[in-house]
Each structure stands twice: as structure tokens, then as C-alpha cells.
Image (tube, rainbow, N blue to C red; front, side):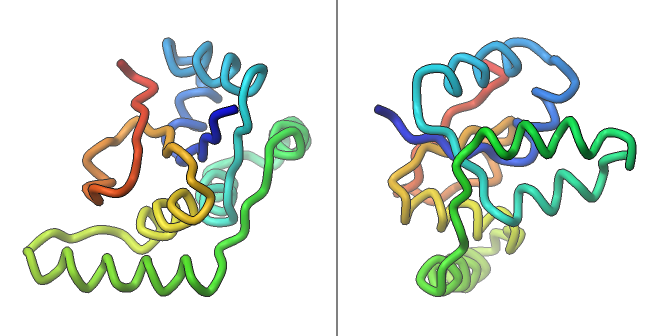
Length: 128
């Protein structure tokens, strides 16, 4: 069974029924282990209308929840340092998502591949 960690932008595409993202994510949920982390939920809920919360609570309840551990936080900070030295600016939120995926041996499902330049992170674009 393959593990997938959904990035916020993939969930946004799913929530707007954008194809092929929507059908691909539904297929993953049916066949594999699909998770989210706190950063993803926080980012998604930051743009969510109050009357939509109950629907999305159900959606997130159906997924695995993977916490950001101390080790994941350290990895995110190390990547931030290393990439900044190369002139590459990455957000802490994306770095934490990538670190959780690395720790869980999960593939990051995203619409923005460029946000994850770490060689050790496996990626799947839901827009292709």
C-alpha cells in the first residue's frame, strides 16, 4: 500500500472539483493510505467559509493524521538553511509538509512541484 501526504494546494484543487486532481485523490483514498498534517489543515481552514467547516471536518476525519514531530521540525529547519545558502527561498509550511512526508515515507501529492526541490522527497502532481 502506498502512502500519500496531501499538500494544501492539492486539497484546494479537490475542493473545487478540478480534474484530474479530484478523481486522482478519490482513487488514492479508495486504494491507499492518504494523510494530512497540521500545517495542511491550518492552511486549508484559513480560506474556508464557516458554513463549509462541517463538510471538510468529515473529509479530514476520513484521512490519516500525521503529526509534525521534533525530528520533522529539525529536518525542515535544516532544509531551510541549506536551500537559503543556494539562493532558494522555501516556505516553512512546505518544508514541514516535506519533512512529515519523509518521516512517514509518503509521496507528497501537490499541484506545485517546484515547492519541493528536495531530492529525497517523492512527488506526485495532481495536475498532470
